[in-house]
Amino acid sequence: MLVPNKGKNLEISIDGVSYLRLPIKTRLINPSDDLMKLLEEYVRPHIQTDDLLFVSEKVVCICQSRVLPIKDIRVSHLARFLAKQINNKRGTPEFRGFGHSTAFAMQLFLEEAGYLRILFAAFVSAITRPFGIKGAFYFISGKMAKSVDCPMSFSFMPYLLYAKRAPLNPNKVAREIHDKFGIETVIVDANYRGAFSLGKSTSAISEKFIQALVRDNPAGQDNEMTPFFLVRKT
Image 1 (cartoon, one colour):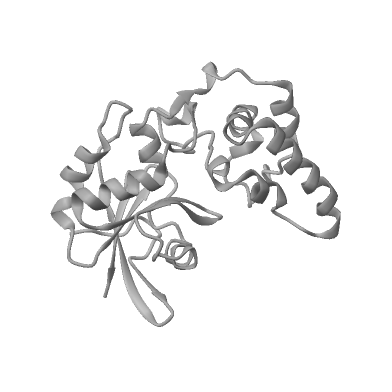
Image 2 (cartoon, rainbow, N blue to C red):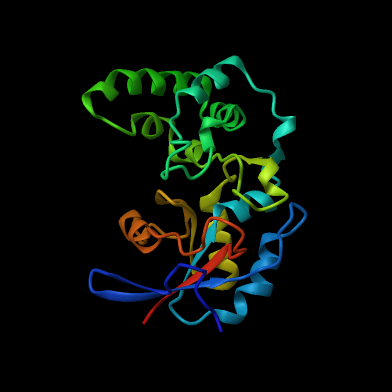
């Protein structure tokens, strides 16, 4: 029986329709693991007709070896400067982790989006912020760069000491999962601030629906080890 993670609910209502978000627990996943084999072992036994599958981008990154120890990241002066501009609300109840305010994460962010794009994003953010316009930096940088994370998880060893790049070809990964398991798939980046898709097996699944469905991050953000969850109409 699939049960909700601590503090989460299985059921959610969107536009008058109720859905179950069924988290699937796994063992600790390592860079040597094969994503398709993991799905075969943990997900296939639970699939029913018309289910949707949501896959955490973190597990895709791990299986693609897109994680690396922070000690191996060569941090530039620009990354250090930009990281200091990120307000992570440390010392307040709103603090949820260091994220891009670490020089390690910002360095990978720069490499993912490109230096010129990030400099332009920082410039636009600086001139629009006084007018109350928020989010320009991440909007211009792009959601693939935004999915860079450091540390990967806040209390989950060994990845507490690792940084994560964006997954490679997430749309392709989603389509391959669909072709093998016959289930529409979304590669999703979800955290305490919300969620967005990085890859989808079909464009018929709207971003609005995805954000509403996982706005409370049913897979959790700690050591739940539920990188997959099925979505099913009740």
